[in-house]
Image (cartoon, rainbow, N blue to C red; front, side, top):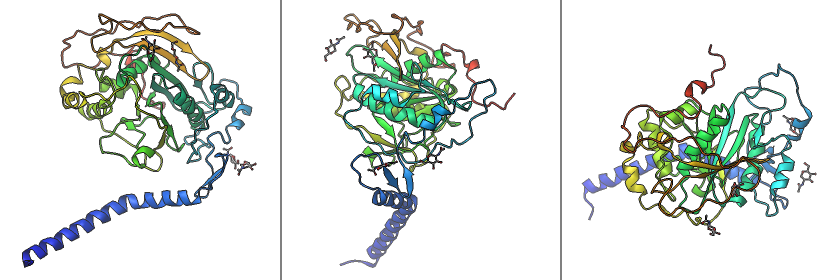
Length: 405
Ligand SMILES: *[C@@H]1O[C@H](CO)[C@@H](O)[C@H](O)[C@H]1NC(C)=O
Ligand SMILES: *[C@@H]1O[C@H](CO)[C@@H](O)[C@H](O)[C@H]1NC(C)=O
Ligand SMILES: *[C@@H]1O[C@H](CO)[C@@H](O)[C@H](O)[C@H]1NC(C)=O
Ligand SMILES: *[C@@H]1O[C@H](CO)[C@@H](O)[C@H](O)[C@H]1NC(C)=O
């Protein structure tokens, strides 16, 4: 027996569901149809190199880059690069050939110089971007990332540098603190106007996803294959994000106290809004990434405290961040494809806990152990005031307005 009243209720429920479904379809339907066609038109091939993607030929991240080495300009009056690089092509085919070596990556990138730096040879870059990659025991992933990232950034005609921030010892991994180290160490070396904080296992799949900063912090990895090429939740800020030095200082960098997997990216997302900024994003079509599959690493177990910590970000962000990041630089290697900065970031108990794990010997190239200038802050720092400036004063960190006086 169904009363009139409940029949009306069903009718309204039905209409409501219809409206929701229609809203969803109009938002994502287009994207779905497009990716469906891309899949249909993608030719299967054995080499994994030649691809036809929805009528756009290409997909090889190295296509056309060989022209660059020939067009070498010398002289003082190099023109600015065009606003949109002519090398940008769109979708990039990403695969992981088993035999790849770093030597091959080096050979394919002849214009990359010591420390993994590059400038367009025939024009003055409009943007200077540092890539910061927290790292430990992921050489296999790093090799693939470098294979794709170098040509990807060259296609965008950027002046760039790639920094690996290597956590010494075997203590629990701390991604966010390594980012703080990367920020300070990169800014010490060059006047970068944008920093990309980049997980080692994420490969960008579209070169229209330009590695330049926005007017607000940008979350670039919005569509990962792992999440079905969708944003997993609205405040998600993980994987790859881009901040100017001023953004970074405004939010007091990243938290130092997230040891182990998880939570720190949400904390960072919360810091963005607590410091009066908002998250910008590229389109879902462009912010696509392929994740290199792997198991959870040793020494990077899920952090059980993450939810409790996250609930306190509002109270902690001003006293835990860039202004309290303590570490020691153990070695600095300027390798052909990247700069490897190895650091002791200590443990929860501090930089020199009672039974410290001895850092690995710094062998090979690079300067001997360089001690970072102490960035000590009192344990009870007052919960106000701006973040301490990095090694370089922020006055030097112009926010990319070449035309302003
Ligand atoms: C890939 O493209 C090259 C030319 O760009 C061509 O010589 C080669 O036959 C193509 N290979 C496949 C498998 O289509
Ligand atoms: C890239 O190469 C294709 C052919 O492979 C050519 O049609 C296109 O004009 C080239 N683009 C640039 C910017 O050199
Ligand atoms: C870290 O662990 C590896 C084995 O997992 C071991 O070979 C190495 O000696 C350890 N390093 C330190 C500094 O304890
Ligand atoms: C970076 O340098 C450290 C110290 O020399 C070394 O143990 C580590 O393997 C290097 N990492 C990479 C990715 O080059």
